[in-house]
Length: 394
Image (cartoon, rainbow, N blue to C red):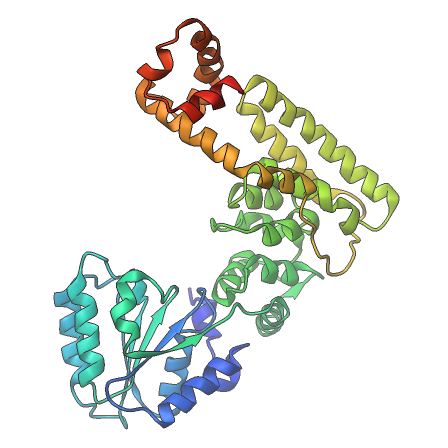
């Protein structure tokens, strides 16, 4: 099977999406390139960092020598590649040397970074470096020899447009909003969006929101502003549920975000009422979790609040500026107090050989009672005066 990411990879620089500034910076740097300097591309995955050197090498009839540095982790393997990269090309005008994912090099192997610096200093050809995080401590020595070029996430409309072009070439009809949802869920990663599209389109000539359920949302952490559109607009309980489960937010916090934004997302009063009614049922199980500390009910809460995606007739407002729940501001004001409690519970847990959550749920309430009767108990646990005060006020 041919991967669509390869099949529809741009053949020239005109096909590179939404990275015009990075492309211009690269061309300018190549025009004045001198030995001893490299170009370091950085940014999120799937936005074209490795693609630009590939395309420019093809356009300039250059040989591209490429290495994924995170896979060749030890100094010896990298040195072997670098030796090959220094040799002259027989069948092209020159070479581009591309070291991908350099932030994946083991922090323990200091020789690998030194070898790359040695290549930059001695190479007769331009050297391109690619990283997600160029400010990693292990890459600090490299930055002195490189000019940095930032790559941004690809905008949703640009991703959706590219997906539409691929569908047209493959003879596949996509219902409205399907491609937009795929683009939105990709979080600016065009490569993953195309991969998702190919998976959805396997054996299909038409795709609808129902087809998106097979994705299960690839396991990537999602921020709240990616979570909200999926919950409100996916039209799929499975899709919304999977997004909540792979999010970097606690389900209780997501619940508050949904509660705060229903009024902005839905158009008609009846739809708003229906969405709140669904959320109220989820809140029943949320309350059971809180009162009984029975975490099995958390799954029911997530399932029900995912049903908000089915509320109404599918009509939504256009772009929505999601509002932060007021309750989170209150939680923010008590952050220091909660951090102190967490620290206390970790200390108690280390003594009683249990988790900090177990310490808070099962032991702190009893310690509060016992401390009134046994004066030396707190000292025996090694608690500081401020920690004793936390327990007393629990």
